[in-house]
Length: 421
Image (cartoon, rainbow, N blue to C red; front, top):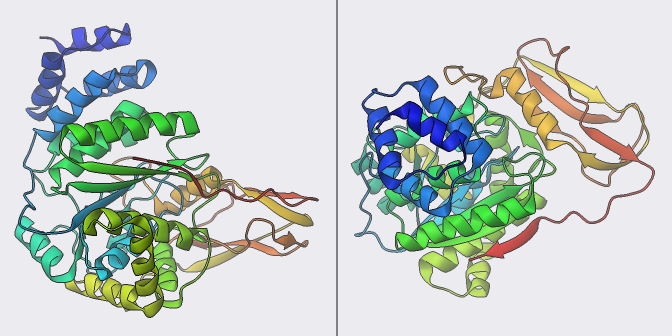
């Protein structure tokens, strides 16, 4: 076989065979195929798509590129994933909350992808937090704490790790087959047979349209079925940022505010929903019984105690979060009701501050980000502070004009579009 022939085949909208897909992954892992050639193939896939069979084969080929974790001796295991959105720090809240209910949360997370922040970057903003644990340490933490979140081990789905980093910097992130195969290869390899996926939809997400989100959800559910995994997908709104803080250490602070002080809002509501579905799957409870258990542990403080236990167990010093040197306020020049916050603009702005990666070798500044000071439908006066920028550099060339202010209020914000299982 020849990689150029395979690129041309996909460029011409032809279906790749199982053998051709396996050849690409195997030879790329041997360095016999170069990054620029894989980039070309990825772009052809973005433009021309893949059939379900091709996506199943790509998932299996990436899955077989490395080791698989065996969690069969741990009861009540559940995993969670988000397709990525601006301000999405749900794992930091959901993981401890679900673990406090008696389920075991085995989570492997990746770094930031494009303008959406990665959970592992948020956790690594906590000084001395150890995200690169050995397999036996990971399993021990799951058994003892009930929740552990680490980077994928070196030998677990290494093909996805290479391709994931390449997609981030070649404009090939937004592809349903590539997203589905990336997520599911990692999740199957992680060992859990129960999975809840938060499929983000909207301006600040990788998936912009509800129809595409449905397609992605159904595809991942089918991949799960083929691998003896129960998958539930929640299609959730990402037109506006999730929560008030964007940026790694700032998002950790907001997670603490929610777990410790029970800060209300859409982020809290979503975390309760995700946690309820996870507890339902793991403990084989009805959704209503699971939700009652989740709410009890949330408001009793058990979830916050579990968060502190989780961070300490992985070496983190939660009282030493990094802070930026400068705070800059962005004020309103208009009066009226706040009807929209452009999540994409703020995500890009946070990335340009240093909170995300433009190239795969970029170093992240964990302390920078954006704090949103107003909510949808708030009445705004001239000179009211819309947001506070946490920065270590000049911001004159960064666009923070993400707020729409109108004379009338907006219709009710819909948090969850659909639940698919």
